[in-house]
Image (tube, rainbow, N blue to C red):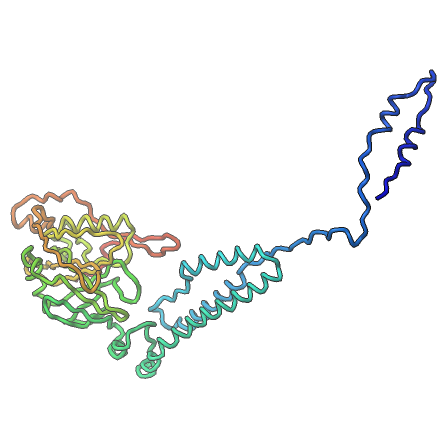
Length: 392
């Protein structure tokens, strides 16, 4: 290894005399600074390679999501002839989270590898959603036979054993079975007498927090059984509503009387036939009024997440009155309540107090009407009025 010592000689040769004949020591110091040993020379073959810049992927899944949206719109157009069933193509939450994690992971890997990963993701989602469509097609295959037979469009997911009934009458909604009265009758959405009828606003074609069914006089035993604490404790407390789509099991939790003519309660009728999905605040109001009107306390605590079914039947308790049973969706088997404590301060309609010459302790109570959610995504709601209900 060689060093260049000629530099030292050059620096010293720069020594000069100033005008007084003295050495310019300052100049020497300035020009003769200590030198660092020169680095050894390397051949090109010995030089380390320049670091390679890795281009990160700016990939996102907008293209994939675009394809999914196109598929959604395609399916929507295919089923738009049936406005009764809403088509939801929202990704399940676990899938959505996994999709986001894949996106972030792909952004951190080299571009070429990202392309391979993208291909794998596209194939995976194609298989997933292709499989879903195939399963849905297979599940709905039996419907096409009935659509051809009756020349109508059937709601997606309808039970096969109800297809003939629905084909004959599109207001058919299922069957109601009350274990205590051993009655099993068809339920219709409108226009059918001598049966169980879904009241205005209630439907089985979409999820609802509250549904209401009006019963005819053949269900009179319902009042006999559930109008007293003793009757409640002896009863099965079970109601089954077989809708067009599934078997729904309910348990009886409360019962009360109500008027059906506004003049019998200061131009007010408690909306016993509520429907839809209430706001949490509105549901609290509904719960409070059931508590005050119920004939006895069964020890059951109503919660916002509960799904409610009310059954109303004509009553001779007072003219134009109905007996209402409140049910909550439950499992097919449940532990019956052995609690039924009489309510000492029942909130009756005003006409009852007038007839019995008593003062109404609830005379200051407000006229409550439900506020229902009309669009959950936008957060829009609607306050219902008396005109939104059918109290018949």
